[in-house]
Every structure is written in C-alpha cells, then in structure tokens.
Image 1 (cartoon, rainbow, N blue to C red):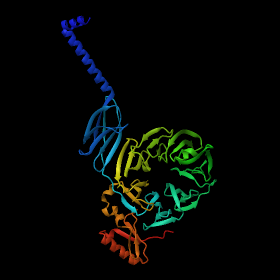
Image 2: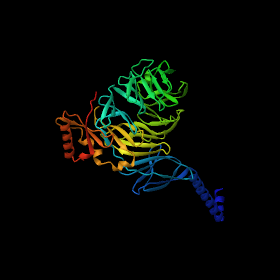
Image 3: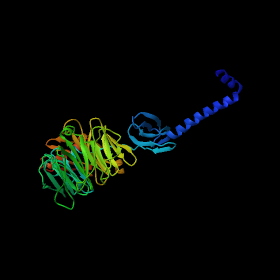
Image 4: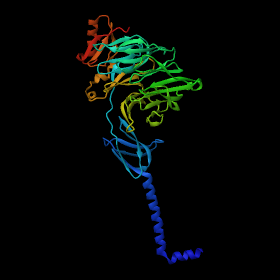
Length: 472
C-alpha cells in the first residue's frame, strides 16, 4: 500500500503539488477568517504627540499595545482600557473592540488644576450658590456662613455630625450624638420633632425635599407636601437598618444581621418605593451609598471597588480605581472621587476617567463638594496625621482659573500666623481674599497684618483685613 502511494506521488507530481497548494490555501483562508471574525482594529489619537498611549486588557490589566501620540493595533475582540498619560496627567477610557471593525477613540489630556486655599481648618457639608455659603466647621462642629464682609460667622452652635442639603435654603442635619435631627431653613436652625427616639438615627434628604429617617428598625417617610412622618417599612426581626439613602422616587435600605454588622460593608440591600413596597433586593458590600441627582443610578463604595447600579440593582458600570474617597455626583452622569491622592472625574456616558488634580502623599482628599453654580469644587483634605490637620480648598473649573494669582494657592504657607498681640487667619470663599484677625486692638492688628503681608512679599492691596467674629 505504501509503495503504491509513493509510486502515485512520483507519477503525478503536478496533482500532488496542486493538492498541497489547496491545503495551504485553505489553512490560510481559515486563519484569515478566524482572525477576521475574532479581532478588530483600535485607533487611539490624542492632543499631544508626546503623550504615551497604552492598551491594557480590562480583565487583568496586562499591556497589549503601546505607542506615542498615535496608536493603531489589531486586537482580539473584548474589553480593554485605553490609557493616555504624560508626566502630569492621565486619562482612561474603557473601550470595546468589535470584530472586523475599526474602533476609533480620541483621548485628550487637560492641564491639571491646582487647588486654592479656602480655610485653614476642615469643613464638611459644604453648600454654595451664587449668593450663599454654609458649612460645618470641623473645629467645633458648628454651622457657619459668611457675613456681608465675607468673614466666617456662626449660624448655630449645635454640634453637627453632618447636614444633607436640598439647596442653600433648606437642609436636615443630625447632631454629633446621632439622636436629634434639625431643620435648617434660610439660616434658622430648629429641632425636628420625630415620632420615635433613637441614639442611632440614620436619615437622608432627596433633591425634592422628601425626608427618610430610621431608628434602626423602622423607616419613616415625610413627603415635601406633608409635616408628618409615615411608617413605611420595618426590617426583619433578626436585622437592623444600618444605612439608607432616598431619591425623589426610591429608598435604598441597607440591613444587616448581628453577624453581618461585624463587617461594616456587608448587608442585605432592599429597594423601596415611597409607599414602602419592596422592589429589587441583593446582598452587597458597601459603606457609602450615593444616588445620582435624578435618582436613576446609585453608586455603592466598599474597600475594594465602587460600582454603579440602576434602579433594579443591576450593575451598569464600575469605577476604574479601588478604595476611593470623597465620592460625589457632579451631575447625573459624572462622578467625582479621589484615589491615590488624585482627584478624578468619571464620565458614565463614555466610561472615561480624567484626572483633575494631584495631591502630595501627605494630603488625602476626604470630602468633595461641587457648588450649585458648577464652577467650583470644594475639597476637604488632610495636611498630615491627627484629627486637627484638615483644610478646605477649592478648584475652579472655569477659564478664570488661568488668571488666579499664585499667592492664592499658597495662603496655607503664610497663615495662620501670630504677631503679638494679634492672631491672623484667612478665608478665601469670595474675592477679594479676606484676611481675618482676632487681636485686641483692631488698628494695631490691621497695621501688623499689613506689615506681615509685605514681609512675605504678598500684595497688601489685594487683601481686605477684617476682624474675626466670635465663634459662639
């Protein structure tokens, strides 16, 4: 049999050659078809030819392509992270490669923004609009606003843990003992009567003024059109309500058993409508819950990730960074957060993350507060170890940021200061900058402040010097 086969090959060389050609051609066509059906082309452009472009597998962050200024590569279908960076900035976008298609993405880098000093101490629950500013001073936990001269002024000496604002005219705050709620209406603070007593109240206020509160077992709701609370939901007998957040249409409740409560992240999440009817439910892990302003999405943060869900508790996105701090919605499709000391903006519509500002290793961003005019972001950050080393800064998102003088970024280097018998501090919410003092002799302190400014090389005529107001 073997001899006959060899003899056939010897007698029909052309047929054999043609058959081999057909086999090789078939293999080539098969490989080409497979490649055509399972790969796609990605093109990434950017606004600077020196920008570094990397393509990473989304699943394991392994680099599969790299170039400068312009990248074109053929890759297997699937999800990738397209990352553009230089020495000062970075921008990431989650991209999907589709078969036999050219997928083009333009990823530009913007100049990083430097934070301006606002207060030499920490502030939370910051709310602003074109005419009003309120915040909780972390030195004494009192509620502050600004006087007509721009000087910090105490609104209430109630010791607040935090305040949730509907707008600058209305908010709900809770005291530091977690036992009393307060209404803040046009700067007037009054205790809010409740139909229950608890030392572990959890609450939230929706953008339309709907208020949800719980004593740890039952959820009560007060609609904007009502002055009374209605009981709408009670937790299972073996669970307690650890947290809740309310939108204009839904309440997300986090319940935990005693065993789960030992892990602050773990819990059973239930979505309720405003009548208390239960919708979607899931066992998830989160210590921070944030509705989008329109109530269509909710971001849940735990120690390893931040995931965005819809109102059916189905995942729709995940931030490209673990262990974020200060998470805040900028608008219905944009999130602000800090990770590795980098202030970042994430766009849900394009799955793009953009760096806004980079902090030093000694500074950690703890709170992010976009203002109501959308031109500034206020940042609570640490300046070192210890509970008292906080400061409030701001980033201007408008073109005016290009005209900000350098000394506004470095106020914290020069102040607070002391020139006997005067103490000097600053506030930089408004322009011009206000430098406040608390000395006994105002005329003497004004002269001392002017001398201090001049000695530090700061423009004296750019500062209004005003006496500090009492803190109680």
